[in-house]
Amino acid sequence: MADAPRVSYAPTEDQDLIRSTARQFLEENLPLDRVRELMVTAEGFDSVVWKEMADLGWTGLTIAEEFGGAGLTNVEMSVLVEEMGRLLTPGPFFASAVLATSVIQETATPDQQAELLQMLAAGERTATLAVFETPRDWSTAGPGTTATRGGDGWVLEGRKRAVLSAGEADTLLVTAATGDGVGVFAVDAGADGVEISVEPVLDLTRHQGSVSLDTVQTTTRLGDGDSAEGLQRALAVARAMLACEQVGGAQRCMEMAVDYAKSRYQFGRPIGSYQAIKHRCANMLMKVEHAKSVAYHAVRVADDVDEARVAAPLAASVASEAYVWVAGENIQVHGGIGFTWEHDAHLYLKRAKSSSLLLGSPRFHRDRLGKAIGV
Image 1 (cartoon, rainbow, N blue to C red):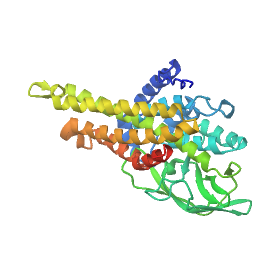
Image 2: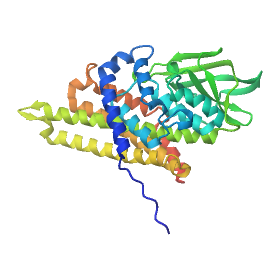
Image 3: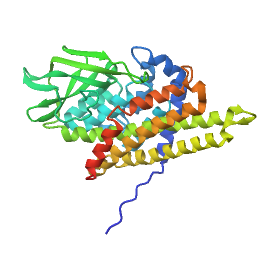
Image 4: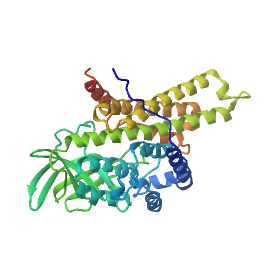
């Protein structure tokens, strides 16, 4: 029996450069004080910083060079996304450069990719995926939204919920039931019959909205037939990336807790010298390293359909629960100050709770994992 191929988790020089460049850029341009200012605005992000991200090649990092992108892999993107999770980067990056880009790559024809991806890579337009329809149903099978033939193309009817960065997107990728399976349709956010409403969310750093479609006309259906399998492949990539983003946030929470435990004194000693705090910090490290391992693995096998069926839901479940737990422990280590609006700890807990439901709950992912391994 042949040995399984070894997967290396050691970063390359290029990946280290992406990490250091991203950290420096985000700390200078989107520190948490600036994030607090942006999260209460209608736009939710800084358009000038977005343009600079596009100039750095981030918006097209995984898009092929022939379509104007950098042509790098999911691993390089995961490094960038992890750094964004570390500082709660606001804006449509995950929705557009990760989620929508993956859907287009997995479902669109080459001509459609050339048209759509070039604009996304250049940062000239943003996109998002409108797929989920009820707050507790993360399934993509049999969407309630329908698409019927009409005029020169298709007519869409339905409503989508929990659409990431809905108000910040120029193009909506809408899933709908057709006569031949699930279709993915590109719809201009400003088209007649499209109504986008802001949804109240726990995490103010990441805006979501609902999308109502009332006799919406579109001529662009991605691909030539049923897109269900391509959609699942794209969501597997997005879930692995989200796990890496959660790792970045959890890592930062642990760092905050350890730094505070070293500098906060009680009875003449740093609180980190007490066993109870030591145990909390040690357990936080274990949770972070566990989540990091499964998330990194999920990204590296995301292009392998069979491997991703197991790795993606595993990473999504583990990273979601780890981030929520570590963010909560960070508040406990900080004590009373950790609950205040002025402290940043609560921002991470809210991002952790929101992210744990973004592309499916941990229970949903465990159900998928069980089916994948035959349990």
